[in-house]
Length: 127
View (cartoon, rainbow, N blue to C red):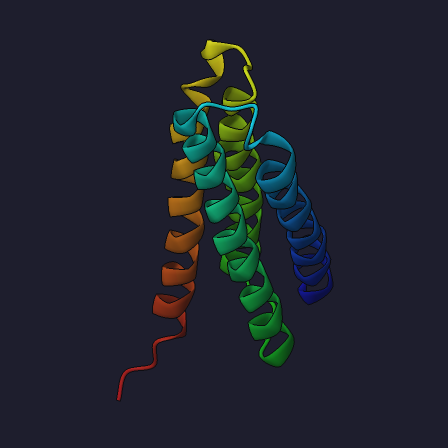
């Protein structure tokens, strides 16, 4: 599990840097300030959750695989695609029907954090 989490973090980080650089250097003059802000929000959350994937990979490698942590990683990936991906697409002029996908991606992010919390509760050992 640590391997796929680490691999996912690596690919996601590579894409976050490339997409962020494309926005900063290729889109700044082409997008309105409002759409540039939408695009940058996608990049921010993409990076945050890439770092969360990396932290999960390191934690799993140091401890043991967990169903909750694996699900958390999948939720983070789904959130990156749903939330950040829909913001990128909308900022670039994609169809407006993608708007409702953004909050679903946000729910995936929240579900990922909930999985980490569930893992912590399962690991809790009473004194």
